[in-house]
Image 1 (tube, rainbow, N blue to C red):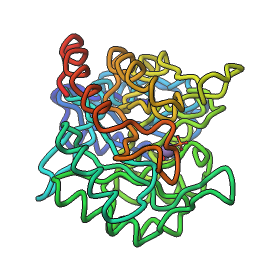
Image 2 (cartoon, rainbow, N blue to C red):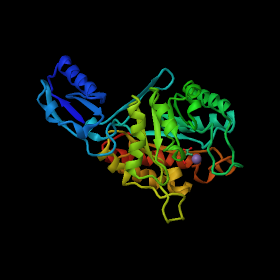
Image 3 (cartoon, rainbow, N blue to C red):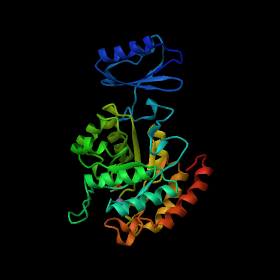
Image 4 (cartoon, rainbow, N blue to C red):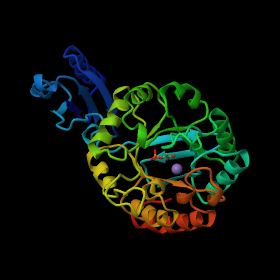
Length: 342
Ligand code: PEP
Ligand code: MN
């Protein structure tokens, strides 16, 4: 149930609506927009007549949300969510604002030298985040599993030296507290999109979460997974389209570019694109990155490596430094064409 308050509604008007929701056994989530405060009540909406709220002082409108996700729906925050990051080393950046935020780095932290080189390449070309896995959920148990906490320490150091924020994947809820020491944006990988224990625990923190779409998940399922985090009270959620599995085998996944404008219509959450895992081929990353930004993506996640042929994982879709430099140069043109900057 959504209650939109009048422009001049008082704090008392708002509190009365919150109290009514609580009496009706709803949990209440407040979204304070520039013009209107919106109150989202999650509970037995079918048992309550919206007219009960419509007649209350300061209430502009009230309606039931028909979609299965409530807090993730655009109605809850019509103006859109902006997830903000700020640190002494990296400055400020906003996801969901006017800038297309680029996150670049290798699949995994492999060594101090490798991650430092990646941070240098990322920063020199205008990326704002350094990405890399320290815990790798590989399809094969024989694949490189990552350096663990040591990898996170190297990642943080390299990022700080180059004024970058850090994004890295959390694979298990028991790692969250430890990872918060090193990571600005906690990534939930495609294989964990429906790890509901992990999602609930991430809802209990305030650390921003990057939620990747599962390879066989619908857009609705992605938004329902985001809902798990939002209902816990963590509204700092960013979605990621990373390709889905189809009958096509030439590329590792099929980039669902249409998911970007669809998510923008259905939800207030920012959405970025990962053309690296979305194609599995470094020669196809740049065209898909261009397409994603043209379609309105709020950012990009791109794998780069100083020497991809020797990468310990995902070398095939990691861009060489000069390819990444060219990608960033092209994105400036595309972003400007859709009224944004890189
Ligand atoms: C990654 O970004 O490191 C990754 C493994 O991607 P995905 O979860 O989308 O496969
Ligand atoms: Mn990878």
